[in-house]
Length: 139
Image (cartoon, rainbow, N blue to C red; front, side, top):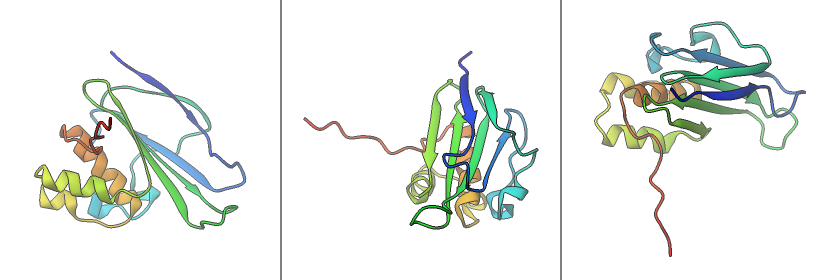
């Protein structure tokens, strides 16, 4: 079984930060019910190393407080049932389009915002959908 070690820590320790994991076998919330980190079940993680196994999904958010681009940066990491690690950063519009093209259920497409989008991606990964764009080989 493939597993991945991941360091739970902010890029900039001066900024607000959170991380949560939903382990394989645990139910994901509906994206429409997620308006922030508090709507993702489970405890907030402490700094340190976590092990991710197939079916696990890790959600992270970090404030861009000390940067010119204010707001938050979000990251979702998911381990597929095949043991592949998928890592995506804020700007999840393409993933929603890809999952919609693959026939994702309408109730999973509801919900707005980056945190809801991360949960939607987690559902897509668990359903076996491709959530990353295919890279064209350029010669």
